Length: 302
Image 1 (cartoon, one colour):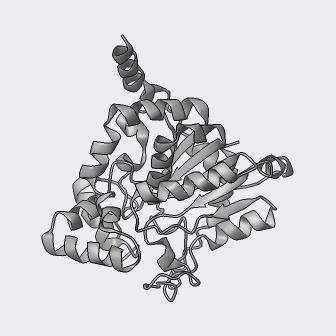
Image 2 (tube, one colour):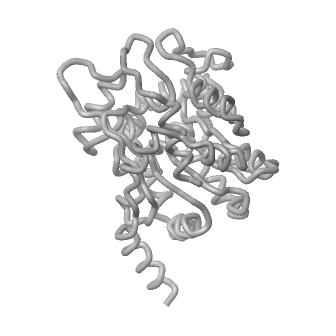
Image 3 (tube, rainbow, N blue to C red):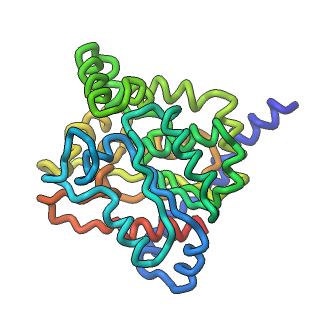
């Protein structure tokens, strides 16, 4: 009987997922004092994704991309400081496996005096989910969680590297050289993520998470136009062929749980690649605002 109930919930849940894309876009226009006051009652945790340290000038990462990109999450941090919203940017070893990073996330949540709002980017979403799996009691401290472009069901690019012997060895060595481990790369593959997400434990946990906290999935995509329209051009085109619309790394169907029959509210934003939500390409005139993106997402968690 229990199995039949769980199956029914999973099968029917996608009917009740709310598309918050319009509310999100409207929320970019104006932020009221009452909304800021409400957000000040929480602590915002920014959980970065894989390779994030390469986009931060004062990190210890051996590879720095700040000559091409602005500091990652700089706009999010400036926003929260300006609005006097308590926050913490988790300086994780992002090339580690979700299992290892989950411990650091757990410690920060447990120590927080205020209830937390989680803004997790890319692999950071996998790390958060694993933290909750290891310790479901964390949910009493979490008010809301926005997963931003997280490859819950894996990234074709990661599988492509992992399934090629030469590329796998090179990427594993790179992850280890930067302070992580080989499991950090494999944790992003379609094969490993499908195995993880399709367990009854995770299916049941997602139902519980959605019942206990405000949870939403943010996904985006970048269409292919003439010329190089994103620094992730090659990855985007590769992913287009195998898995359809994507942000240059993560397909919509990987970032959105509603695509797998799980009742999670979602946002889809057009013409936004995987980097635009956390940094800005210095040679690009695109003025996508991480500030308005972030505040609009956070307001939907209230």
